[in-house]
Image (cartoon, rainbow, N blue to C red):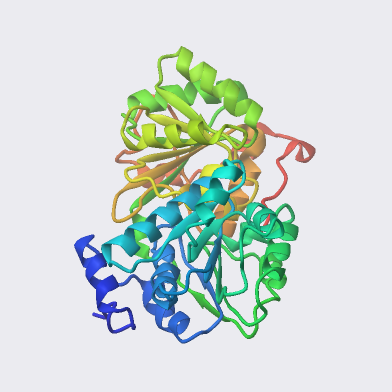
Length: 407
């Protein structure tokens, strides 16, 4: 078995990991750490919950000179929650290993005056959003001349149509001679093409572990649109959901669903992009501590969030594409735990379910009634009925079918 020390991680960091119960590197760490330490540009792709954060944080921390009181590593993340999660992990590791490295989160929506004040402490590792980093750099409050390593976490999101310009502008602020590392669970062709600012990158792909995949069950429940919220309520009660995530495509629908579930006595909260920082922090903390059963969110929560003990993920709305499904589903069945994803689909969405199956190479199991738990002796018999056939039996016209899922 390979050890962190054999990969080149120093004794202080390796010992700090050992105290946290992390004795051996995971696959993505084993494949990338030594290459990052050697200065290679890396595109790392691995399923959610497989240790990507440590795969870049360990070599990043080790390469920082604690005597140089300037920013040396910049990590970009697409959401406030993910950026703060990365910053907290980096801060904890630095303290546990007595590295003397200062870490600062710089994310939009937070108090910029407070961030400017924190920058006076000369942090060496910056984690944040491209927009806020650009703003502070242009104000002359953030010096980036000594940055030697740039990390894009969830790079497919950072290089999508919405975030590409800000990400590109942030990259241009950095020295031309720097190392770049990209990590995500999914790597669509468009994102890879847009990563042309990497020189001769090595693309490392870790396939999903069959044992990990076996720990997650993927179900579908055919139900009219009008009954979706009621079915989530019934399933939450009947399955004894402890920590569940409910994904909804539109903010308006999330707010309406939250009101309905609370009215019916379900302990629920929402995690939405327009909510203030304190409300979002409280919502996540309440789920972690078991104060609520369900956390409702748009795809904001599908990216990188590590919440222990999520036993169920509900897709109240079908994801826009197969990659979004992977990110949503990756919130459960993590670190050896079991979990389930339940997708609620109207008959008009049956074809979209079929497309998801093909793109992801998974078989959705039918969950016919919200009264019963997703288990039974006749699973094989039920599994023969594919969701695509459901719309055929109803004779639904082709112009009423859901659009095919994007690759």
